[in-house]
Amino acid sequence: MNSSISERIVFYRINHKNYQANFIGEYIKKERIKQGLKQELVCKGICSVSYYSRIENNKVNPSETYINKIFKKLNKPVPKCFKNENDDESNKISKQFLDALEFRNQVQIEKVFGEVLNNDNLNKKLYEFIYKVYHKELFDIDKLLKYLYAEQNFMTNEELLLFLEYLGLYCIIKRDYIMASKYLKCAITLQNHMRIERPSLFYRYAYALSRLNQLHLSIVYSWKASEIYQRNHNLYYYVCTRALMAEGLAKFLPECSISIFHECLQISNCTNLQELEYRIKLLLAQTYKRLNNYEQSEKILKELSLQLFEDNSFNFDIHLELIDLYLKLNDYETARYYYDYIKKNDWQHPYRDFYLKYYHYSFNKPQSTNEIIKFYYTTIIPFFQNSFNQEMLVKSYLELATIYENNGYYQESLEQYKKAWEYLNRDRNINIV
Image (cartoon, helix red, strand yellow):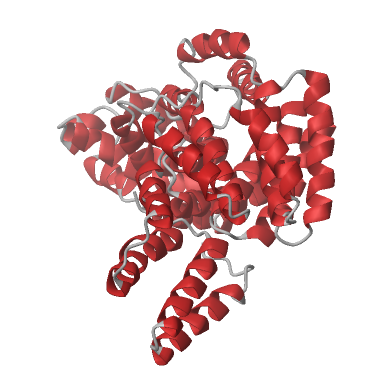
C-alpha cells in the first residue's frame, strides 16, 4: 500500500468540489473491463459509442438518467458517491454502528453489524473491514484490504474518512507506526475539510505519534480527544486519552503526569474499568521510577506481578519493569530472579527475543571488548532506533562511549558522545509524516 495515493485523493477532494463527476467515467470503465464487456455492448440503446467513450474518459458529465441506465447494463447498483439523494435509514444504521464501537457496546455492535450487512446502500466491505480491525481479526483480511484500497477513489468523503482511520488502526495493531501516522494524518486533513471531529481519530493519531516519540504532538492530539470524550460522557476513552497525555508528559513534567494518572485511577476505580486500571498502574510505576521514587514503583509493580493477566504481553511488560528496577537498585540477584522467571514462562511478546538477549547480556557480559561493541552495533542500537526509543538509544550511545573510553579509543568514544548529544537535542516536534 502506498500512503501517497490516499494523500493525493484527499487533497484532490479538498481542491475540487465536483470530484465525483471526474471519477464516474473511470469507475464505469474499470467495471466494464472487469466484466469483459465492449463499449458497444454497454452503450447499446443508451447513447452513441463516441458519447459513451467520452463518458469513460471524463470528457462529459453524464446526466443521472444515463448513469442509471449504464449501471443497469453493468448489473451494478449506482455507487453511493455518485448519488445526490441521502439515505436516512442507511445513515442512521451507520451512526448506530459507529456509536456502538465508540462506547464498546458489544451486544449493540453485533446487532447493528447484522443490519449493516442487510443494507444494500452501505459499503458492506468497508464496514466488514472496520468490524474485523476493531476486533483484531486480521486473518484473511489482506484481500478485503486490497479491494478497499483500490476502491477509495469511489468512496464518499464519510466512507474514505472511516477507511483511512481504520487503515491507521490496522497499522497500529501491526506496530507499523510510521504508516499508521501517515494514514491518520491524511484522515485528519480530510476531517478538517469536512468540518467534523472524530475523537477516535485524534486518539489513534496521538497514540501512533507517541510510539514514534513525537511527544509534543501526541500530547496535543490526546488532549483534543479527551475534551470531546468528556463532552460525550465516554468515560473509557476519556481515561485512555488522559493516560496517553500523562504518558507523554512523563518525560517533561513527571509530577504533573503522576497527578493525571491518579485522576485516571480514581475514575477507573469508580467505573469498574479494571483492565484499564492495571495498565495505568504500570505507566504510573514507570513514571515513579523516572523520578527515582523506586519504593513507590516497586510497590505497584510487585502488586501487579502477583496477578496473572490473560494478556501475556502485559505480564511480560510488568516483569521487564521489575528487572530494570532492580538493576537500577543494583540488586542483581532479584533482577536475575525475574529474568529467569520470564525466561521459563512462554509469554508471547513482540520484543521477547530482543529483551531476553538484552538482559542475558546484562547478567553475562562478554569478556571480549570487541564482542561487547559488536553486540551494541548489531542488536542494542538497531532495536532502539527501530522502536523510536530515544531515551534508551541515548543511554546505549553513552554506554558505548564509556566502553570505548575505558579501552583507550578516545576518537570512537567522542563519536558516540556526539550521537548521544544529537539524539538528546533532536527537535521532538519534527513531523516525520
